[in-house]
Length: 296
Figure 1 (tube, rainbow, N blue to C red):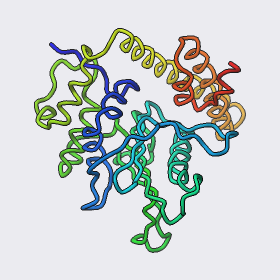
Figure 2: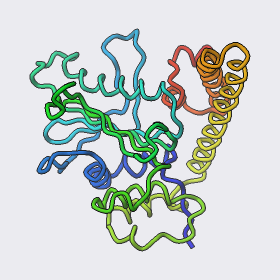
Figure 3: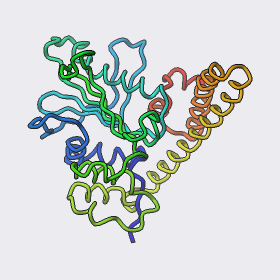
Figure 4: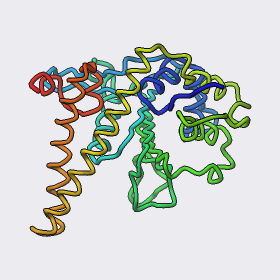
């Protein structure tokens, strides 16, 4: 019996979507709000690290970055937990990708659209309990039909996903089921997932037997990091709430979140560094700069 790894882990996610163009094309066409007739046909992978022109500004890194034959850029990121800082980082990455050609001297008229797809294994929008798919674009404040389509940011809350909410979008359902149903507890893969060649190939790519001992060790360390980070954020949040009740509910909660998240991130970065994980991964997971990590 085959054993499977969770495709949401950093290494497995990149193995599936960062090394196999045909799978990424199917995935993006299924989940992005692309206009009819504007589906992705071909892709070219781009460096996930977007080095800014100004060396004083830190780099921004995403899981998968690519562009199609029309020059449209697509940024894909898997995030295991949600913070307001992540939303700001998504906006930064999107704007950075859009502006890079102009920074390099190209004409403004040649700038191409950027789509950012952020998959979140957490509740990001509790105020919208019935929606798991959120698409943001620039629209006219009065005439909603008038939009500027150059930048679109899509957030998908995986814990809210239910297959019966997207019956008219079969491929989107299959890909989201792949992300939410396949993990180390999977004993048998539903035949419907294997009915599509691309999804079936993705399932084969997360079979445990396809990974070396070193890769399996790295994946275990990744989940350990996620667990510790969640715990740190939760503990600091609870302490912040307690302090907030003493000093003023609203003010204390805000202070507790900010201070707790910062301390938790620094502690997690120290643990990751002690585990010998690469600096590039620590930067991507914590948002700290290379200089801040070297000073730990």
